[in-house]
Image (cartoon, rainbow, N blue to C red; front, side, top):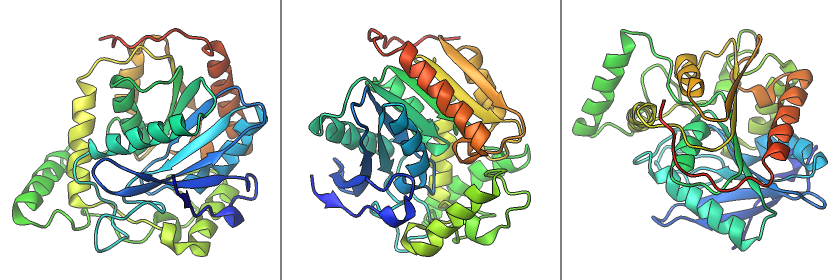
Length: 322
């Protein structure tokens, strides 16, 4: 594997990362960042959300390193420093949602090649939550899983949902599916919206950190999704809702002020997840790992407790229906 750029100057809490280029089976080059841990007793596979990049999770990686866990984070195709898929690099895009599973396969191959300490554990946020759930259903080799604000449904009002299906479907027929989804813009959310009443975090320092990352490295910036991405996301979340939950121990965290992904889909999924627990965090927004220090510390502690409880779990791959 070739070394890739690692943006250490925006990773003050974890500047010792190493980045790698990964080749996917269908061509796009993606990137992964490894934060090692001394005498590691396992590895966290970090699946970020849409618009995100590995370095955003430097603080999380530092927290896990203190607990004895390495972190291996991915830049999905079309975002971060991975290969962008459209002429306009600020539009988030994917051909079909299953393409992200090719990225997962490349990450797992790299983790095996690097002989990352086992057992492995999954942490998946937002869009990464949809990718991660599908990966678990397909046998992702982890002992336990954590989801934060997972995109198992997208918040749309009753009138907008059929319109979104119709518009995104029609765009494919008309050849306009690479355009921005309605109501979105090509500039990054944290660069265009104020901290007050933002939908990501209640912590002003974390919000400012996200802003400074993109101001320092504008090549990381990503705006709204393409019409095609939206169509694929709606289709994938609907298909996932019809599938049984995987028999992998799980904690899912969601803020009580979640306004991006659909909490009802999360509650429905977790109500029938075997060995699963839903933790609702009072007052938190979408990104619980970018929340206040107290919330972050609580989430990390619960993750570590889950990992320790299942460090020697036998493989259980059969899904369990509600």
